[in-house]
Amino acid sequence: MSTQTPSPAVVPCADVEIRRRIDSCPKLASLRSINRALADLVRLEQSYASQIAEIIRRDPSLTARLLRMVNSVYFGLNAKVNNIEEAVFYLGLRQIRELSMATPVIEELERIQRSAVRLPWGELWKHSIGAAIMTRELLSNTNVYVDDDTDYIAGLLHNIGKVVMAQAFPAEFAQVVATPQPNTAAVCDFERSLIGWDHARIGGYYLERHRMAPEITHAVLYHNDPAQALPHAFFAAAVQVADYLVRFAGIPGGFETVDPVAPEDWTRLPGWEILFGTGDHENELARAAVSSSLERLPEVLKGLI
Figure (cartoon, rainbow, N blue to C red):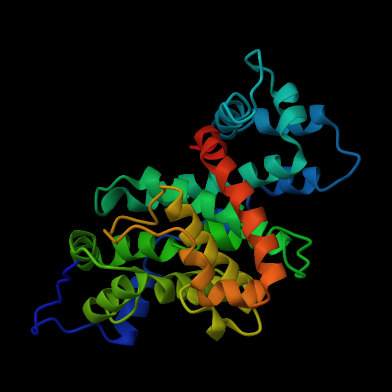
């Protein structure tokens, strides 16, 4: 595929100007308090479905997403579920928590982009939630122990730099969208030639300004080069592989046009080797687990978006 390069007259912004524009973007309250009341409740082993349902009822959007998910083909229920407590029972606490994190973030990001480039943002959110699910699945098949939602949030926010770019650099972002590239690395090169930073660096800086955990900011900043994310390389590696897996499942990673992901491309990524090494046995086990999760992913996402 042929690629376009910017005109020689294009001069990227200085770092100070890039930071000024990013700092002027709206802040996201949900990044620090993602449905805290619900998140605290579902972490308690003695929580009752009725208590969780009562909190969910206060959020119409979360209620709608929950009912769509439980009534999706993925769950294969014979009768439609319209009762929130019943939906909580079927979904389980883990998926309720994932919903409670994704919903406010997505809605706030949608509000940010209203004054920017008009694009099918729903596709980006679908990809982001898919990447969150696969990031968690990948890390669950390693020796990395995660006792909170860092893995899910890292996957969910890995492309937040594209949202910020659309707001802070709309003209350059429009040019990125309109210019086909062979792969993600070429997209990042093109972004840097136009702006000075790529979407990963923009996203990492934005999250750092929000005081997000280093595991998350490093995973976003280095998700295209996970070896640079030490000491949090496993999180960045999982996000890199998850991004490829979700795009292979037919869910684009953004708005730019890149070549399709070929089968097994993700096993040749630096992130795959960081996660699973080079041993045949470990790789076969990982491939089997990934294949199973990937088959279920489209149906799960139908209920979420």
